[in-house]
Amino acid sequence: MAEIKFCGMMRAEDADFAASLDAEYVGVIFAGGPRVLTVQQAMEVLAPVSRYRRVGVFGDQTVDEVVRAADWAQLGVVQLHGDSSPRRIEEIRRDFEGEIWKVQRVAGAGQLNVDQTGLTERDAVLVDAYVAGALGGTGITLPWDEIAPEFHALQRSRRRIVLAGGLNPDNVARAIRTLAPYGVDVSSGIESSPGIKDHQKMQAFSNAVRALDT
Image (cartoon, rainbow, N blue to C red):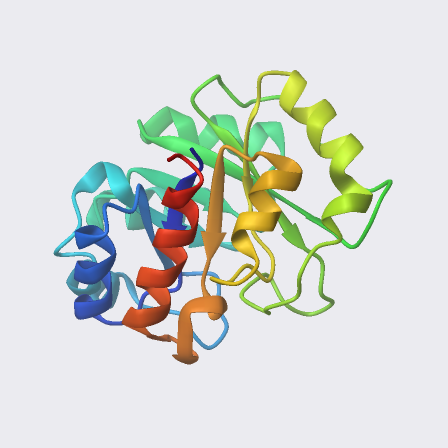
């Protein structure tokens, strides 16, 4: 069964509902865009969520800024949409004991070529849709059939792969059947407006994923 990450949280009640659905991961955005939070805001939003489920999404912040935010917000996962070079990963790991997720943004076949240097067995690669000028949360769906061969090759390297990009309650089951990812990441696909989560959509998304395990 694929694990679920509800991302782009801006309200504590939405994070609380995500936790009530037993979502494995609940994310907040530090990387910019319409869902960006300060560290103080993130701490308040994530208050209902246990530490190991907390994910912070970062762009090109300095290593010190990433580590400090991770410490203050008690994150279990740091997700890197900006520089995720092996050197940066190792520098973060010196002072951060949680998981590190490296983001690979692709537009189609032939682009899923991830340098896994610096990642450990417990870390993950998150595959998202490439949209110029945006780091994520765009609602653009990846061409699952086109990228399937590369996606499965990456999985055969025993890497944990999380799928993002345009997922919603109506298409997540097909995405999982096509790619069999370790996890699925959703933000805009469960919203009524940017940053405002629709609890019915969250429930429907969870139901669609969990139903595949029955």
